[in-house]
Length: 295
Image (cartoon, rainbow, N blue to C red; front, side, top):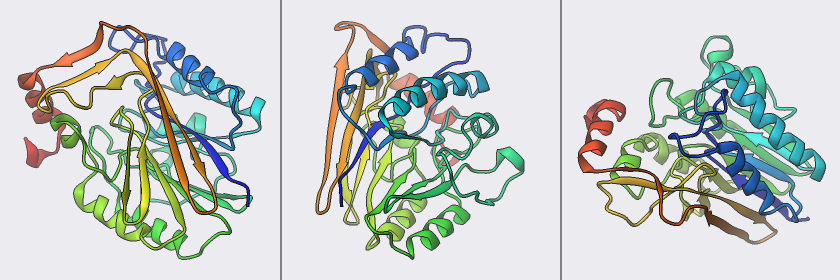
């Protein structure tokens, strides 16, 4: 078995009109830099694990599709995209389909293009499962019973080398109060981990937190990629929320008996933050955008 090498990116937050994220970040330039940083390496997969778009427009998905697929095609890699809380299902699917080329069509609940974007592909002894943890109109994450049943059924059979699961909201606790309020539903996260336990899942790739985190849960590595559009401050006051102007990604290598995750982060402006919310602002955001029981 040859190792599977993955470039794991997340939270690109493209806008269709090319506007700057928070009025500061040139998202296309950040993505260009994130790709250039590892352009000398070869990859089998390039994964963007959610919040592909900021405004959910078809134009934004076309821009990032063109940028990523041009880069992957030149290297013989396969692109994989997942839905995040800022993404819009209809526009995502209209441009990116089910998130990965040659995906098996899944008939999950929902109407037309607005149903959850989930898929599975098997290639060269590897299986890639993409799940949709987005909740339309909300920032926190859920995994409906139908998606969890699909995952359980899929993992009942093993493949030669193993399975990679991509889901935007990680089944991990966050570092800050705001991100925890917008985390994956606790019950859904526990059920997800129960499903992947003792299966051929080699790694779970997530985003959402804009900071590199890797944790072994249920015997499976769960890794969160740093944000492409900005980098959250992990060890500031957890009641506040802030991000610096920088980009990052992770190089993930899955080999016979080990998984290696090497994140990279580059700060672009040494003094300026993209945003800073004090505790009062964070509390208001949680009340407005968090789960009802947290408000």
